[in-house]
Image (cartoon, rainbow, N blue to C red; front, top):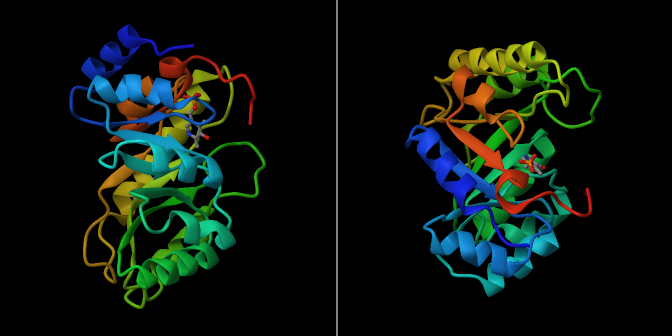
Length: 223
Ligand SMILES: *Cc1c(COP(=O)(O)O)cnc(C)c1O
């Protein structure tokens, strides 16, 4: 229980303002979040809709809540009124729904597209072909959902070279797509790096890391 303050200060100084730290507080109690909040942390990441809504209701309103997990389209409506950034948009269907819900609240919701970069088999994330075709489609129709960057997860492996290669590859894609003709703004956020691999991600050009267990301790339920 309790957060690791030394580790927090260490990470903050390593990032040195060049990357945003999203403190991943999934499964962790309100007290732990408050502790980090009192040290000045404002960006927090959650994976589960109901848990995020509960925490949002009970915690200070200047927290920027990042939804970092897989999001089901039918749950977008619960987080649309307050979410700061949705990291793992992995289909056009989900993006459409975000746009629709955001419009109801007269909001623009910032989104990252999740790109499948790891060697692991997963249902989630755009592959390169899908990403290219989506980013080249007419995105001007989406007035209330804004694509502002990419997100990816490296393989869960001891093979550091593979991790570096995957992050470098995502950075290359990011650079390739920075300017998208049908978007008003250029892509600015590259979300990659977690507790075990954030140093590699930063070296490869990440400007947003999502760190949980290093700050809050390991999660009891590995959900
Ligand atoms: C849980 C999670 C994290 C944080 O993982 P740690 O290894 O605890 O730092 C980062 N990103 C996503 C998408 C997650 O689900």
